[in-house]
Length: 143
Image (cartoon, rainbow, N blue to C red; front, top):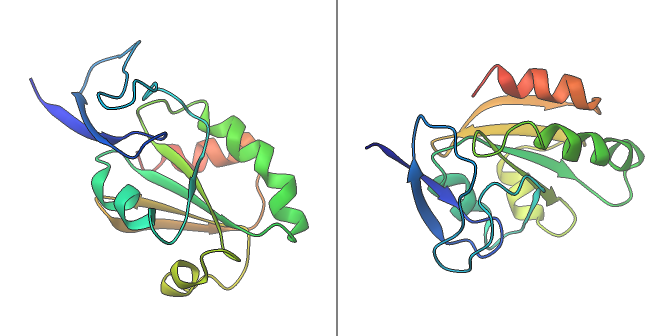
């Protein structure tokens, strides 16, 4: 049976789960947290590369900052869109004020900016605030 690697959104442990199957329950082997949790993961300078490179599922990162009005408006939409992708994509947020090195590495010049990473590589980028259905449609093109 084929397996995919999924990083636990709670503890960061890498878990192997069956691929190409509808999974109703999947818990982290280390901490017991549900791998089906769709709440966006908070990334930072120290865990960003781990999440991007160790997940076999796409990772959708919202680059944002607390002072950004459009970022604040989009946050609930990003979280709502994430609910449509349990074990299909991992949604994450990166505060560019707290992780300026990562933001600079990816050339983030305007926020909010979302980037989809697959196999550790950027595959798509979208700048500007979107509603939940637009985010979900955009992500669906790349998973």
